[in-house]
Image 1 (tube, rainbow, N blue to C red):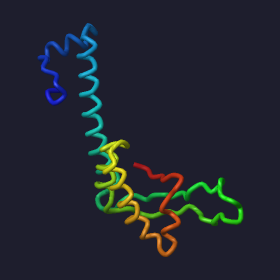
Image 2 (tube, rainbow, N blue to C red):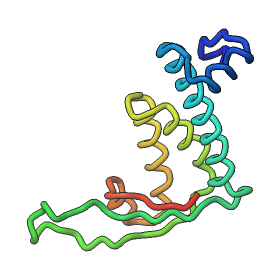
Image 3 (cartoon, rainbow, N blue to C red):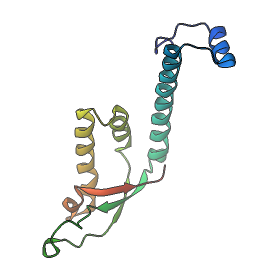
Length: 136
């Protein structure tokens, strides 16, 4: 709460919750503090789950949608699955920075390139994908 700029005493906060009479500015600060803490907890939990005690997590990779490509130029690329082990901490940290951080997007690109090299000689077909599925 202090990191979010909320200097109210615990008794005051309990009163806000009980009566619902916090000012709009205070409600915004409490909401921001909640989401900051929640995001931190989600990041910690995701890293733990995805790393899976060093075993990693199986990821399904679905190739880019080629419906807009001329029929004669389409490639027959099926979905693939791979077990990702060591990249999760960096991936989750980049995700945590958010979509508006250019460094995060760049980091995800670098990590993705490292992950897909394990797919073998056709790895470049998965540089751009429609979606990636995994269970956490």
